[in-house]
Length: 191
Length: 97
Image 1 (cartoon, rainbow over the protein chains, first blue to last red):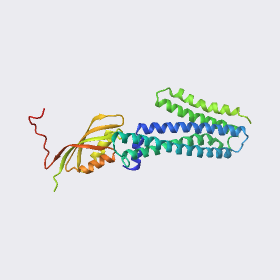
Image 2 (tube, rainbow over the protein chains, first blue to last red; image 1 turned 60 degrees about the vertical axis):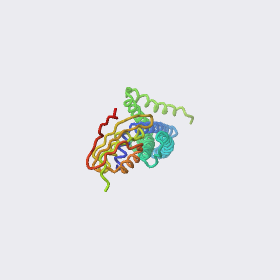
Image 3 (cartoon, rainbow over the protein chains, first blue to last red; image 1 turned 45 degrees about the horizontal axis):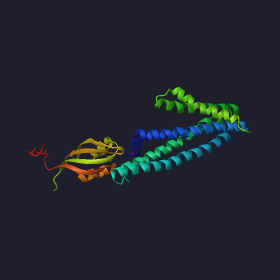
Image 4 (cartoon, rainbow over the protein chains, first blue to last red; image 1 turned 90 degrees about the vertical axis):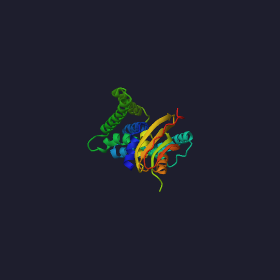
């Protein structure tokens, strides 16, 4: 089985998809709210250069992205090792080097990648308006940034709503609201 | 020269994942295997027991067992072997009830 086919087979596994989805959305949510916080905080602090705001955001993206990959890599190592031990106890055989172990390792990689991509999307997309410094003012870039962030959160919520047979608009609005709350809370921060 | 093995019936224990489709497919992919019939005998939370009937022209029992092990399963016993130039079914005897 070549690598592409292995990845396709793993992605068709509902357990792998479900765990990856949770990490992706959870860390994407963290990243998006962080990004909204950065953009509003930067505007309120008087940072006028869009590239500076974007650079700060990139730093946060590197931090949260690394955190997402690293933590999930270690969490899933422990979880999957425990699962392997349970199966080995039930079967009374050593499963090292078998397809079961290889599959778990592959699933762990997919989980970690999904976990790392979430915050990258969540942070970078909302900060893109700050790169259009010639076209939009800092205030407009901040508003656009919050808007993109809320839209991403809405998409996360709508997606979760669609897979769980909830009303996708209601689920999307519930997630999107968090972005507005973070933006408003930033207005009341000292300084 | 060893006479060819035409059929093997195996008692296989395997984890719930990979599923019966995948395990059957990898065994069917072994050399000289024409067809595989896998029946779920028992299922537990973590493991499943299969009765696997493998048919072919000149089966390699060791290769099949190794393939099952690579897939995460283990062969508990070989319950039937048909070996020779042609397939012979069991003959009924008065002791069979």
